[in-house]
Length: 159
Image (tube, rainbow, N blue to C red; front, side, top):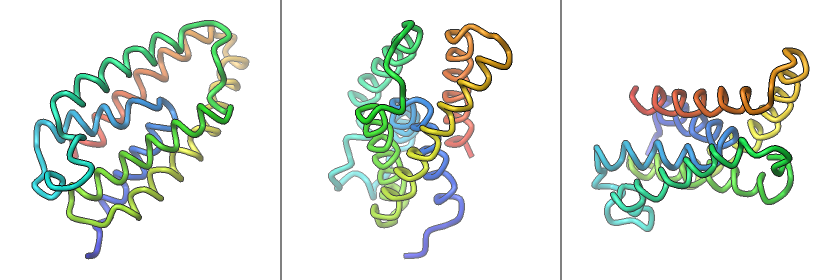
């Protein structure tokens, strides 16, 4: 089945969101799938993404990630466990999005994961640059990044 450019763009976008904040992509996807369940996803191994329980769990995890990001001297997103979590999150969101749109999951996995990998490093170095250039508190820049990830994910899924 041919996948639309819109779905491809959304998978890349969700991967980018995961690269910024690991839990936001599954949270946003789960929220929208909960509101608009997919019959194609219902009988797959990814059906948990549209479960109300998953919606609650991902929201709690996102709140925890936002709070954890405010801790000084927290782990950098470019250390292996952080990178792996972001890539896995982007891959999961991409796969779930593709499956919910009756497309194969492999392309969604790759697009979401690759995008998350690129944006993990890109957003890390951009944040360091902004912190230094603006002499801003890291927690303020992190808070703005939190808002950007949520607003970006919301806008992406609404279209």
